[in-house]
Image (cartoon, one colour):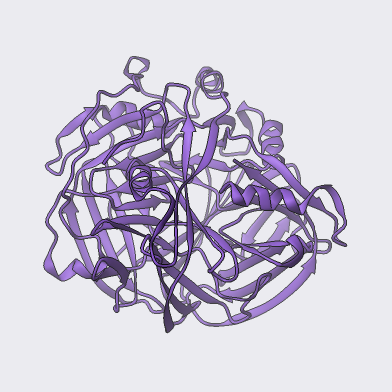
Length: 568
């Protein structure tokens, strides 16, 4: 199939996307749809990313390095979402081509869908895509079942979906913290969007390794330097099976190559049915840990209980690409003192709608949501599992939820996956240096409404226009009298269209917090989900339920001042 021209870089804006291939899998793992040897390989290219002469980077130890980062990463990223394919409910191509979608996701592009047939009009981003028998099927997991366009079911239900270019869509429903309810298969019209980014010449293949552990392109030094600059990575190979990855670890520098490990944790097992893919009957999460040495560790755990089903370790081929559309803005030491950049610049970027990443210890991760409190930035990292080494999870797989603050505190809350019980190690508070990065995409304020719903600036129509272009959407909400003061900044994981031009969004990677000082928050002693539904009616719905158990703690709908941001 044809490739996109090299002048366009199809890049990931979350943490990482991976596409894997190259090894025969054990026959007992075939139901996950991740276990076949690939039939196509990508040609290797010489890495255009050459910074070996700069040597290794001491991330937080040198003001000179901070200045160097700021100079080299201030260019605005010219991103757009392209409508690459439209398919009918019968799978007929209305516009674009399946080949264009194939090219996009196999080269690391993020992929979204919009369908008027999904909940009366919905948009969401896929966790990963796979080509099979000439068709493409993608998983959509950051989603909760709704009662109406702006109301989430009060006893919250995960509603996962696999959507295929044949028009087939399978929905799988689970109570949050419990097990399977039902599944439903429908046919829908779909518009498929993929990112394209015009780069500044610094994006491209930075590193590649084969399943035997041989480096086939680039260098380990270029890869680790890219991570320490806050860059997003995309990992790709010829077999079209892609995964978003949610955090990165780089082993400490001991003078040789440094192992890089990444996690991809929001997946459900799937299997083959005729010429499409559907969810497997063994209802299970599939957690991936992937290393720069080519090792992939896979853990499969039952949805709704702390039960391991299977585990596997394999060697794969991986190509690693960089996305340079991030810039360093601030660094604090373990006591919260400024050591580089500007805290004011970080706060300004947050208030303008930008995404935020943090480098702390050996880790790099994007914040799932964040606040401005008492002149500091505080943010949650939800998409993280406790590790036993760079490429292994704990035997008892455990969430490692974190709250980072520019005052230098890193609070970690450990909860067993599938059970409302503390994980090994319990809760900890550490002080450590943190470097803060923001994306360089151009974010536009689309709509600002007060607590009564009156428009301060912008319009509902501008949000609809952004959605038709496949834009990323974020919101800032201020709820008078909230338990935590100030604004909270949330990502729109899914969007639904309402009557009279209204729109609602869900944010599903949010945990309940309590404020302990003017500038600091903690999770509750028993961590709880705090799912948010925000609408252009200036209402914020919150549903709180224990992590790991079907225990509803309460729900409420509150008036708020809301700012909607979009980038397209």
